Amino acid sequence: MTKMIKLISAPLLSLVVLMGLTSAGHAETTVSAEVGFIFNTLLFLICGFLVMFMAAGFAMLESGMVTSKSVSVICAKNIGLFSIAGIMFWLVGYNLAYGIPEGGYIGTFIPWSDSSAIDTGYSDGSDWYFQMVFCATTVSIVSGAMAERIKLWPFFLFAAILAGILYPIVMGWQWGGGWLAELGFSDFAGSTLVHSTGGAAALAGAIIIGPRLGRFTKSGAPAPIKPFAASSIPLVTVGVFILWLGWFGFNGGSQLAMGTADDAIAVSTIFINTFLAGAGGVMAAAIVTRLGFGKTDVVQMLNGCIGHEKCY
Image 1 (tube, rainbow, N blue to C red):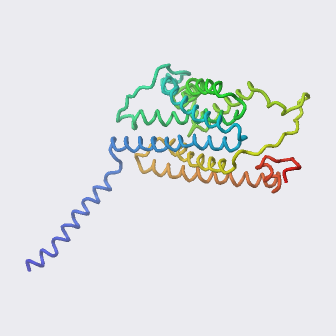
Image 2 (tube, rainbow, N blue to C red; image 1 turned 90 degrees about the vertical axis):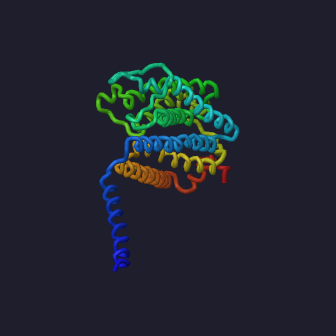
Image 3 (cartoon, rainbow, N blue to C red; image 1 turned 135 degrees about the vertical axis):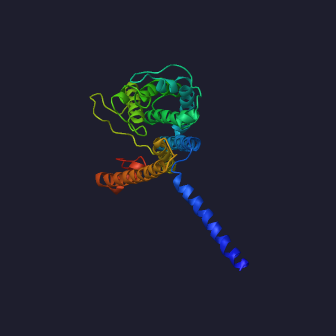
């Protein structure tokens, strides 16, 4: 009888303990502030790595699309702009954006400093790094727009001004609590702040440089284009895939939190939307190109031979 009681009581006791642990687990609906701090910081760092890897994508995409003689300058330009952007954002950029008064227009010209605290929800260093790679991406937009049309050192000077002063001020208008934020304007993942600033800077650069020599006649009419082949279409393809991967960090990290189940679900949804948007864009471009140019013209265009009778 005693043996029977022991045989029955041991499993029952284990079941009771297990149920107690399970109930405690369900009662705890959120993680501690410190664990949330760790997860949020980790999100910033991992997504920042992905966005930084986009620099390789930009370099490959640009290098593959230009003529072979310009490849070395394009590569040097992409390495240099990222280095310059990081230094300038540390020196003045971060506090120009986040040192801005509520509803104001510009922050302070002082270097970044670490004042991390559990209450902020993430490490200050991880926030600096994540925002810095956004800044560098803004400069990369300009790099592509002026490929083969600007000398290296003038571009580096342009990159320093854009990364250290212009972009951080615009960034602070919304993300830093400036006047756009006061008006209720919202920007997720830099859809406006990054792309409008980079696009405007690229347009300004193109206006200063002027049209390509020989591209237009004296009357302003388009002149016949001398065909040239891109240096490497496979390199362009690799660059596209790297940029596509980087967008998961760009968009997913902009959730800015991973400390709750809702945040984890939101980041997962953002990843799905990012992929589907890219896939949809590829198919839309393929259909429009096919309908607008035809199969032969598309092949000729990729080889730099459009309109050239000796290509085939």
